[in-house]
Length: 147
Image (cartoon, rainbow, N blue to C red; front, side, top):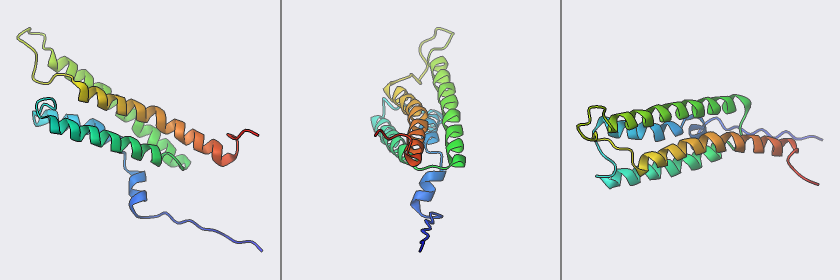
């Protein structure tokens, strides 16, 4: 007398949320704003949209790393590392672009609160997602419980 339970999660919104590297949105949004020459402090509604995207991404990435298999974990870790590298490169570019060497005044793109908020989201994802996956793995194996 044994029963088999089969869980099939092959489609739907949760499959899409689990496969897409959401943290890249946090890096791509300021890059798009830079290309469109939109300053998020001058047009503050773009900054608040960016903050909303950042909070959404942090929640999705946290829940995405909850129950995860090995391939998904390695892919998530890869995208976390890539996003940290891209975010660091973008902040460095904004820092160099915002303070030109010619001394003719600051460039139009200054680092502001929204950029640092995005940096915190990217670093938070890189730290929290692997920790959450590790914690879930310990729970699934029964190693994280105290008697």
